[in-house]
Length: 405
Image (cartoon, rainbow, N blue to C red; front, side):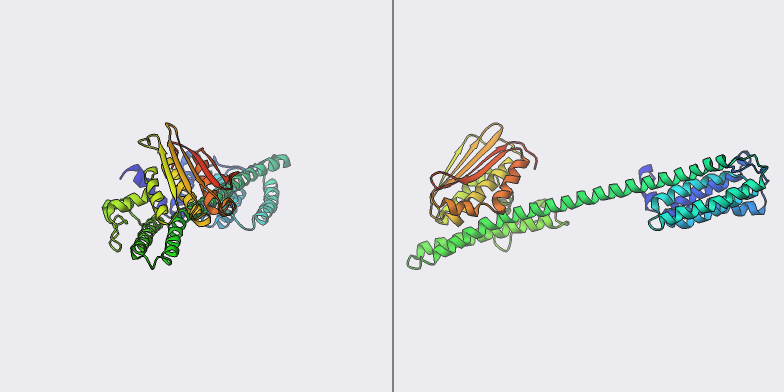
């Protein structure tokens, strides 16, 4: 068995089992000939040889360490009683050093009655010091008893510091987890908004137009086909998002557990893969879809897309998608221009819509444009959206290439 595996097995054991060697170590060490009478000595009582009562004192000092993490108060009470018996009988065993260990454990793990415990221990120390002073030869001064009191006080303080550090770390982890959950919810909300809003808006516009095409069966069939195609794209994208939320989802389409093929709607693996990984090269598909919905769109693409643009191509795609969706919703029928420029270090996107500027601006102040601004900001780019002097509405984004996903 490797050391790493042995460590994992050891950590899976109960804490009482893991603390058993520590208690046994103090007990066995107290019986070693070289350590007899060499332990903690409070007062000036002469060292007494071990007898039957010494075994009880050593057991009280050592064995309760087994439950120091499970029941720290019980451990501290038993070890304290054993220490008092050890000092009053003059055994001065090595097991006496278990008292600071019990104090550190109690100080770090005791959750309730902490102040009461400190007060009771302090009060119990007074009669112990008085009894040791009377039983001894009088060579121990009160100042020396006070000095010894500082040792267990420091041990308790060390445990309290460990407890506060542990609580602070737990608080930091909880806040980090809360921030991560909030960020993940916001990311999912942005993805749902990007996917659902665009497809559903196109379907609504196409369905509304189909109402007036009953006299033209060919155009009516084209409009209904566009609605059907858009609905299938929406279902594919939504299925992909649901797969991402499933912890058991296998992202590799080749395993057959994902949504690499859509047997219900006849969408092939290649098409599904294309829909799941939108890039600037698919902007033309968005433009064609928007045109079929009745929106006149001019599309211009300049430069050569880089071989690897990181997340820039996806963000550029989302910018165009959101801008075209707003154009359909708030300026339907107005001419829209889409321009995508590829540079060596950045992608620039500009989408302008003529007319109905106030309505478009009002519609663009919600979740969609705010989410785009966050996406672009994460990659270190620039984003702007607003009405122009001619009453239109323009969305501009400069997206650095090679940003993190």
